[in-house]
Image (cartoon, rainbow, N blue to C red; front, side, top):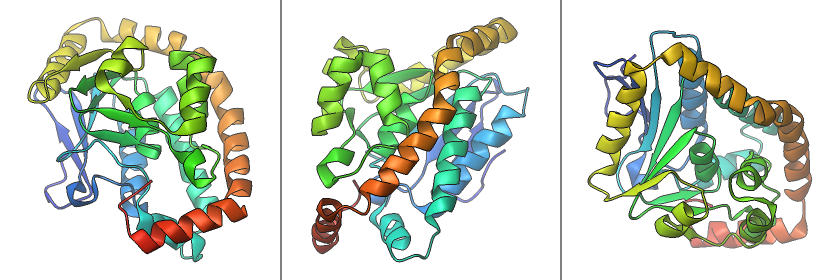
Length: 263
């Protein structure tokens, strides 16, 4: 389960312990998600879900970011009709359902930005280990979009409805120390330690009663899984409507004119 090319947008490595490390590997774009990366990522999760030899999964980003969200090229392809929006929505539903139903415990290692869809990738994991430079935000509202990718479900479950609404309404950034204080992440470590800490924890789980741990995960995820199918479909529908708003169209034009990496 190893992709040999270091230039591949997703690296999949199995450690001697059996723990699988998924690395979002577009560091020059802050690991922003384009269509190929999204397909590979969801496909890898689906493969892992069927592999009982994998005891735990770590998800991280290459370079100085976890994931900066959706790449502008991806957004442009959708707006120009090169990629069918329905196909994107189907993939988003597959991602969320697979991640919520994944038997193995998952740990996100976040150092640097985890923004928008990238933030959803991180918060959908069972545990989040943050480096000192971690930053979390869901700025969909800033560009007139409903966060239909699952963020509007995960934030309230993690930090409570009132705090979640504040961050989702504004897109304000939550830095590592604050994320720990409000319960968004499990641990904060120095940047040069955080990945090794996550590996040690994942391998501790691998040495434990993994069938019991997986059963506990399944039980504690029941509420989220019960909500997720209906929620994600409704969220995608609302996001699709918001994509047609004049506010969003103006935001996209401004965004394209400035050629930023992602939102």
